[in-house]
Image (cartoon, rainbow, N blue to C red):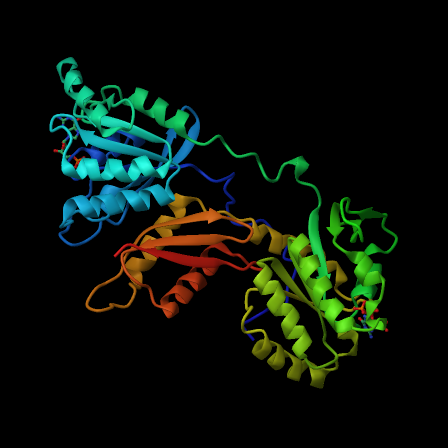
Amino acid sequence: ADHLAEFEDDGDLSPEEPDSGPMPVVAVVGRPNVGKSTLVNRIIGRREAVVEDVPGVTRDRVTYEGLWRGRRFTLVDTGGWDPEASGMALRIAEQAQVAVELADVILFVVDATVGVTDADEAVAGVLRRAGKPIVLAANKVDDQRMELEAASLWSLGLGEPRPVSALHGRASGDLLDLLLDAMPDAPPQRFGAERGPRRVALVGKPNVGKSSLLNKLVGEERVLVDPVAGTTRDPVDELVELGGKTWRFVDTAGIRRRERELKGADFYAGVRTKAALDRSEVAVVLIDASDVLTEQDLRIISMVIESGRAMVVAFNKWDLVDEDRRYYLEKEIDRQLVRVPWALRVNISAKTGRHVDRLVPAIERALDSWSTRVPTGRLNAFFSDILAATPPPVRSGKQPKILFATQPTTEPPKFVLFTSGFLEDTYRRFLERRLREEFGFAGSPVEVTMKIRE
Ligand code: GDP
Ligand code: GDP
């Protein structure tokens, strides 16, 4: 029974090192030898980016964390991706395309001593269409005399070229100022006071014990019935204080109305469940532990999976489960819930109150996982370690590589891997498992997708 270990409140509910928010991503693009690595070193203030290029091997570190005027950002050196590109202009343009997709700001580096080349033109074409903020660095402007040459880069149609000398540090502070100004504003803190109570959907087939549980949870607590404005048949939520926090149990009117007594109850139960899930952040799925798992239970679990919500599975009526049944049940649960080994599980009795107090910590844990963001630098260091230890299987003679990984969104956490080839499903599942081992995500779905750059 390695899936769905019963949730115990171990008192440690904080997600691992939650980031304070997404860091803006700056991608450095440009053809080889214009000075990208030198500039990256200058920006991060270390001599780290220049790694001995082993022919045919992608430099393993391509992301760095930068800090300027108190603002943190992630710097991606796209030059590290493919040092020996053939068909260069095209390859560089492709590289720029990937940079455009993943970055908030693009730092385009051109060698002012050489002037505009075909490859530079190709990149500029991609960047002009991108609609992302671009800072154009005219590099190798080591002295005043060179500034005149830099002016020729106006022809790229990307605005004012900014003369800089990565090697000597000339004007690099000005360049950082420009990058900072081009970054999106720091996002508002999502965990601020204005966020409001977290939204919980209590779902499960009729008679499983939803209203009993609601009554148990609510108990003597203050309950506020909160009709949601703007709808004709208002779904009614209840605001309940539990564990020192206020929670919004969504659409409890549907639970309390006991619709199983109505005609077409199954159909309405489905519609209700869907609506409640849409409005929730975390779902508590009730399953009757005294009975076999039914089609309907599995359908509801599928609905939760599709909704992308955090999930806690509560096996209710545990007071009716005896030793014999328990043994059989554990096996059945493992078999039936293989699709959601990540769901948190509690065994409760809404009737006796057994372990009902474990529900709130489980919900909190699931929500923490659901909102967890892994800092880009840490994510890339993690993948680089995995790739070194367990590289993906070779396909048609080629070893796919993960060039860069990013987590564009949370709730639920989504990861995008920029790869140099197709990663097999089994390998992606392996990566997801490792991600979960490393960063937690108990109670939350996690999505891993890839973007292939052939
Ligand atoms: P990348 O391939 O774009 O990453 O370029 P590198 O950072 O490896 O630099 C290529 C060459 O240009 C190296 O020999 C650097 O020393 C040189 N270089 C980089 N920046 C400057 C600069 O500002 N001035 C001068 N004179 N040389 C530079
Ligand atoms: P709902 O349709 O999901 O809201 O289910 P109810 O809360 O109305 O419960 C259906 C029936 O199951 C009622 O007769 C409850 O008393 C009973 N029930 C609910 N929870 C438990 C439990 O933990 N143990 C036992 N033995 N019965 C329960």
